[in-house]
Image (cartoon, rainbow over all chains, first blue to last red; front, side, top):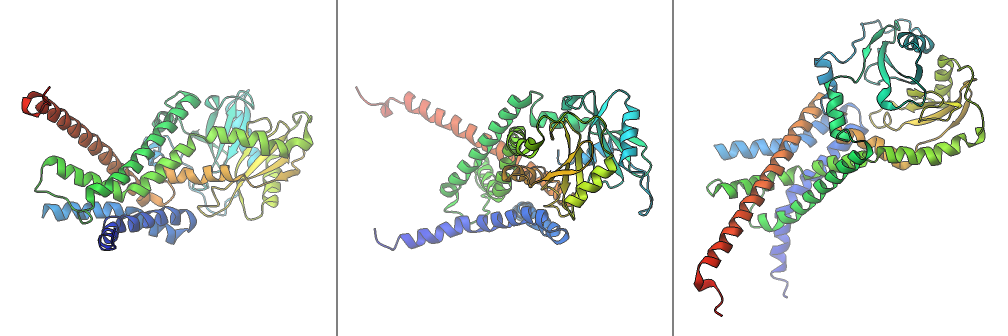
Length: 65
Length: 347
């Protein structure tokens, strides 16, 4: 009931969902940028929509080292 | 589906126009229309379309009647500069894949089925996000506990791949579901907006002599400045009235090229009768199509799309595996508890 346990819980929430939210927002921005802006939007979309692949590759390589 | 254009090309099912100089003279649309009719005597024109990415070709749809079924249409590409036929369009192996992907060859019920599957897919994603919290709240992002059992390792991969692809998967799932409603939305537009556009001309007979297609195109372009013609629907086809041509105009950016604007033109005189924006639900549908297939950001985006598909399949597969292992485990625990009398409640 006190404030003490609430703060770590709040911090924990950011730790768990913080990066996924950033990745999600970038994905959405990338999906739309290729639709809304010609050449630059296209190039941005390759990086933003490709980010999940880069993270997967990075985790895979890190794990096998 | 993502690479349908490339696959049809690789198998030789995509028409290849000859190379022409940019300033070469084009013969005009009437000549193309006549060439289309000449190559299929006894048929009528339904549509003529221009692909934004293939400026050297014009595609003509002929059928046994203007209201002939889409599956009976002959779709043929013509060289925009010489008017020569280049071959049939959309008959390659990818047509089979497209049919399997959209309606399993079952028409609208098949589409409802696919839409329902897409909806279940989205619910599964949302439930996965909800479960992400209890399973990962004590771990830092992208932790793979390699030293643990195979089940834990797969759990960690499932959580990681699932959460990094979640927005993309929801967009592809949502736009896929929306696309299964395409025909329903088109019918809604026809019975409301299109009906209102042609209402002043009710009772007019089908045109005796069709207007010149070149005049139709130039009048339509005057009515929608800065736009190009995406396709012309001939009088009597499902996209227009029995008396009018409909020219569907597109802009030149990736977004505005999807947002078609219909211009109605008199079938005999080619005078512009009306021009309106499409309603918001059809705009949403047209914009959602590239977001489902990922064919709007060049080859790199297509490759990324395909790899994300692979990740999604891994997420689905590992999810099934985790569910199965857990189910087996619960059953074993139940059996053990039943077998050991000490754990049973004493009567």
